[in-house]
Image (cartoon, rainbow, N blue to C red; front, side, top):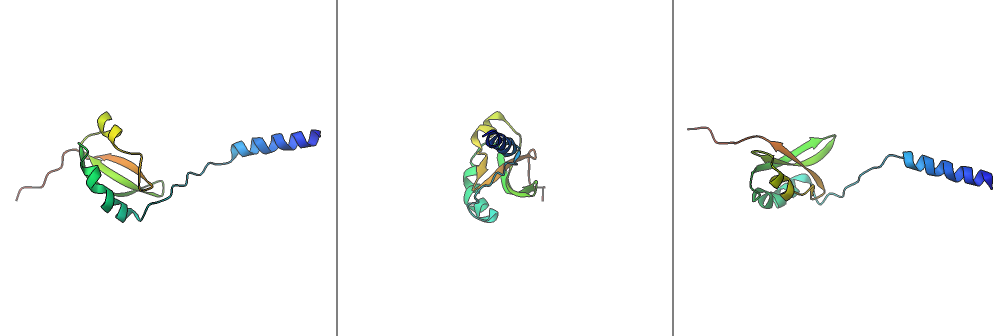
Length: 98
């Protein structure tokens, strides 16, 4: 009986040390997710573009903004189509004069 308790305690201790893998189901390839969701994201004030990127070896949904504000953060979801949303502040963007 004592060995059973020790075994159970050891199993519980080892289970707490196991790495946690966050698997997110992707809705579609990133290019399709961008095409589908960019119009709605572009309606958020401060957003000036979207794109795809990579962070820690994972594809991410990039939102380009002229500045980062609490209002922007409140309106953006953490994920879109299963891809993590990353905000990149690029400032004001304009076309060069002709």
